[in-house]
Length: 112
Length: 116
Image (cartoon, chains in turn orange, cyan):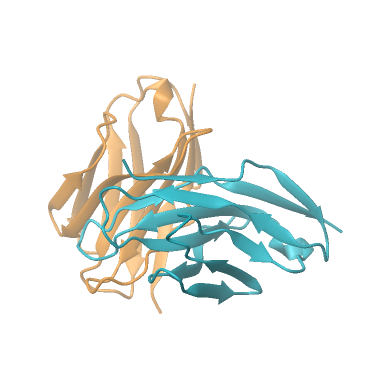
């Protein structure tokens, strides 16, 4: 069975500090990978997607970057956090054949 | 643009009462949108509750049901008798699942609190 693991579960970070959020998918080869984000009071929106190792497409510009260093790993990062980065981050995967999304448990980020 | 509007929460109902969470959508860039309801239980990730890909069809799962109404651009979630375990955040979403981007457009989410 496929599993998706996100880390950390929650973070409190200072403005201007770096951030790295991770996501690992096990049991599925060559998945499409996604990052979604929900600001407090806002809606979930897609930030990035990746269909293969080393290739990431940005959907929304938020001074964040994403990388896919391995087939089963998706990293979201920034060198300098902004207050506006606070919110809930979800990683997700889909099979290549238009299947349904499977979401991780999410990371709650508070920037102070 | 594409958007989803749903009932503002929190919604509080008593156990065994009926529930309806309204959802309306606008799909200007998606010719044949698929419609979804996702649920997030406390401490868990987002789970697909039900989906409907064809207008006029009804989806159902765990006692919940929703009908894809293209005329009224609605996809309301209903349940005849809620249980305390249904307490969660419910998201209505639309998307075009074909293609690699597969972007989902979500509503704001509706927090449901079921009182025993």
